[in-house]
Image (tube, rainbow, N blue to C red; front, side, top):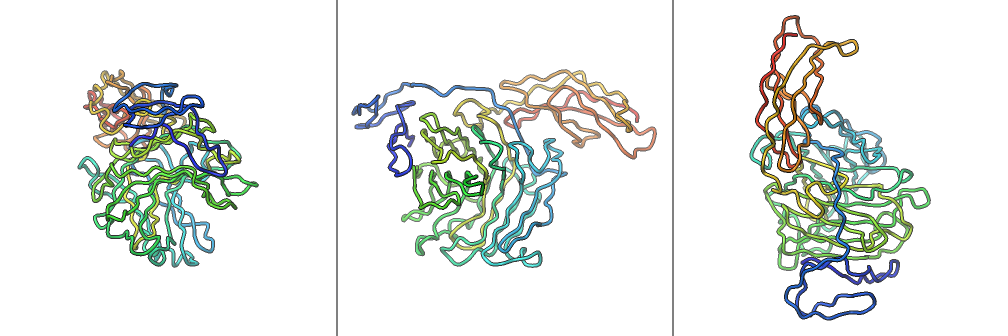
Length: 445
């Protein structure tokens, strides 16, 4: 169920979120506020809009399939109950490099947090991470980031966790608008890992953002989290909550909560997770998330804390739970945009299934790049029903790079004189649809 106007009970934030932003459907006897007057509707369906969100073109900030060229660094920076593990290298499938440079991040990888003191010889007993090849969401082979928390504490005690984390300093400002998506899979035995028999053992984290910078520390004043809960009926459901649990020195306050029992929690199959937020102290604040294109939350209203602290931690996903160990995460196809890629408030799940047209007139010529020789490629642009996002470049059938323009320079090291090379180019769109190959361009190196 969508929430279009909500009164939030809190001691720290204004009780009134604001005037009506939009109404898509009103059920019988629903109260809606206009100015300072509450009006009772008895309509079954009523559709109109005030102050509709302004659409704007989105820009891709980062994309990684954990493809060839990406690796996990050795855990480093050990402290009493944890360490850090960087994700490194350039993803040859997307052209983007780890660590993530977007958003001013000073760390992007996996934080290893354990319930017991650990060091480099024992961390593997608690948490292991691996990039490995598996059958992906569309039935083809892909690389996934597999995270496994093996020791996490007693049942009902969260303990160890391995958040896939984008960490940024509080001194560089906020992240006002962001859209993140990735493919994710829970293992087949996931439902049995959660139980309501023991208090605190019926939850599992999916996603979080936290603020920081209070008194120039990592303490924050606001958090938004998405978790999976097991209900009294034994069924799993989604809960999204805004609260002040961001490592600050205050008693817990829940600002708003949205439970969604309509959209199923997929198990033992890949699903597309999407999340977007717009930060604001006013009624235009928004937090939206969807599973396989179905909204699990679309909350409007203030989403800043008492001190207006910036987002310092984006926890993309997290094997963190109160249930039984082990706690696993399977993820691939991470994308980060500065807004909704497929239109304001529109899911990109199956939004665009048409591939771009093939690039044409591909030409290859020998060139000198600084001290190295290589091949310059150029071609004519493709077209798409939505928009072309870029081009994959293939040498002798293997992908060697990516370009967002209609040219590419390929540097080849250590090749004997007289080697023949064959190049093709394929266009792709924001939904990942690939065109057929261009014409083949041949050159002798």
